[in-house]
Amino acid sequence: MAKRYIPDQLYAPHNFLNTSTLLLGLVFSSVGLAFFIYGRKQKVAMPLICGIALMIYPYFVSSNALLIAIGAVLIAIPYFVRF
Image (cartoon, rainbow, N blue to C red):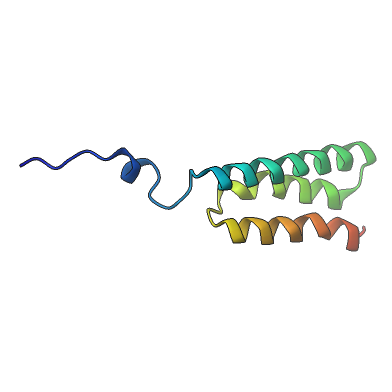
């Protein structure tokens, strides 16, 4: 008997494409875009760097808890570190 084809096992093996992960990635990427635009217009390095990091990291993290933790840290950094 032939093995049955199950698309979920091929395209989302590590819980990457669930709704909450995609929504959290969208939220943190949007905040990152705002930080990036602010840092570029004001010529301030820290919001620019954190904005780029906020836009990129959701592609590499698939855990919701890690998405929230890393995102919260990256959002807080520009308020406490200024140079």
